[in-house]
Amino acid sequence: MQDGVLDFGCGWGRILRFWLKDFEADHVWGVDVQKEAVDICEGLAFPCNLKQIPSGPPVDLPADKFGLIYAFSVFSHLSPEAADAWVAEFHRILKPGGTAMLSTRPRSFIEMVGNARKMNPAPEWTKRIVHHFQDENKWLSRYNAGEFCFEPVGLGGDPSKSFYGEAVIPKDYVVKHWAGSKFRLCAFLAGDRLVEQNIIILQKK
Image (cartoon, rainbow, N blue to C red; front, top):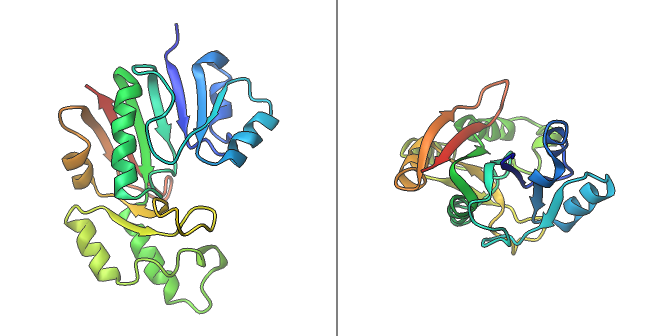
């Protein structure tokens, strides 16, 4: 009997599809807040469970269901309030001993945005983010102090969706707010050239 695997923020299924090689489809789930993403997965006929979810918990999923939840390049865009709420919801739907793997922007992202601002013209791929984290020294100091660094950009061009933006989450924040009585912090892997995001691995106690 396989534990369930949940791709949180599955997008078009770029990672989700690989699980279907080794797992029974009934045990693979993909969820996303954007209907368009779920529609694409359905159009590609992925034989697994797909669901559109709200931007904040709870979700219509039973407690203690999943052995693994992963969210690649999702918590790199969530506000502190949204991130905290989803981590709490992951605790509810993970099985005891289950694992949550999350990625977020690394500290170097703040420096990268600052360097892009100094370029004229700024590279095309940075134009959406180049106006964020304007006071580079302030944001780096906040990160070093263990603070959640977040700049809202809105989702899909809708500024009212302030839960979405650019998030840089330090290890000290994870230890203070997420690890403790409910989770054990298994690893905090700093982003590098191979994986340009911090990787956070939590295990439900």
